Length: 457
Image (cartoon, rainbow, N blue to C red; front, side, top):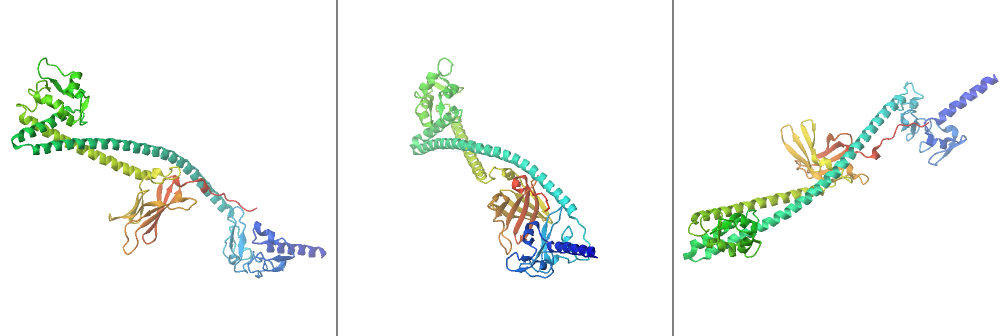
């Protein structure tokens, strides 16, 4: 009889102990170590320890009933060994629904719950391992993008420098050709001012001088050099030979090279006289009796060629400057601290959602095209819009087309970590305000490394 009483007391004590400690996490067990009295965790009240988990709420913060549903603001701790421990509202304790995977919340109900923590833990660990593999591969690919981005950035800078040098050279050539044309216009004005009796002769001579100067100017530099004189002229009389270097220098007034105005004052005089030198293959001096209309036609042809050359150089100059502006604009964009996002600038990504096809061209624009073929702008590249800790996690595209009875369309693109670069989703949470998910290795960083599943033991 005495032995039975002792056993009953022991069993009752064990029951009381388990009842009192149910629903408490390891970090809070220190508040429940005193077995004579219990101080509410908020310090508001002291109660006998027997009133802990007695299914009656004594503490305002609900801390005396961690294992029952007596307190409306209480919470029950699921240990969930093998999975992730967490809290549930105490109102869910013994409500006939299994909320804890270890079934600890339904200890006094008719519901039979299976302990699924091990399976859940195994499944989550597999997911975490998959995320780890994705992150590791993403970081590896991101490093490739960084190396390629840095190399491409340097190439673009070198290209910009080359374009700037070419622009300077073309500008010099444009100015030289314009000066040459100015000289032609000056001669034309001189023709206009010439006396009527000499009108035809002066005009013919000026046109001929211009034509001959272009004939001799083999490299189109708007000047005549010694080697060009030697290549195009021959002695007019005597032995049939070309002009020596010394003779060429003398014909150019002692200069190695002369422009159009100096040509008329030096070599042109000798060519007109026709008694010392002539153009190879010609029978008489230019401007003499035998040149007539052919020389005039040659002068006109040379002037037209000069105008065409000037137009070509001006067009090339404008095109180069346009390339410089476009390249400068591209180089002014923030492609990340390590140029990891530079490769995105050459891509346009599409995703079809119902009857719409969405196209994202990073650092350019976002568009929406309907099945009927109508395309609207959802915004142009604005800026990075992430948090101060990670500003490169979001991209803002602004000032798209105006909505009917609404605001202008805007798009926010969130970058997530992945092994491929692709659009994953498009939503319109509010009118004409779009949200996109862009998955890319460039969105991976070590801080995204997931934490492994662990249990409190």
